[in-house]
Image (cartoon, rainbow, N blue to C red; front, side, top):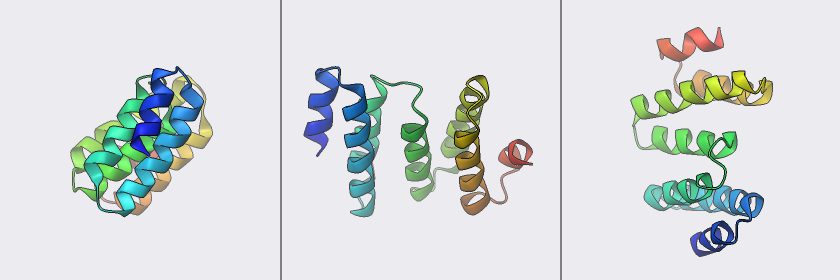
Length: 113
């Protein structure tokens, strides 16, 4: 699956790369292969650097690994992007992650209050 992501990126098919990357990330995450899941997201981000779905997937993987600070930083930066784009759906998804996985995170609590 990761090879398909790479081919889509090389072919400048950003939507296909995104779709394949999210599927590959979910599969590798479920299989306990976080490095490969992260690689899939980063490949697709090369063509779509502001894609919220890819950033949210990375935040979830980071949390799976216990990398709370990295995940929180990712979510805070994504909040800024969402605010610039007036993207309420992404903001809602960020707050869902914050509430369920980081309920004691004061930096995110201020954002989601």
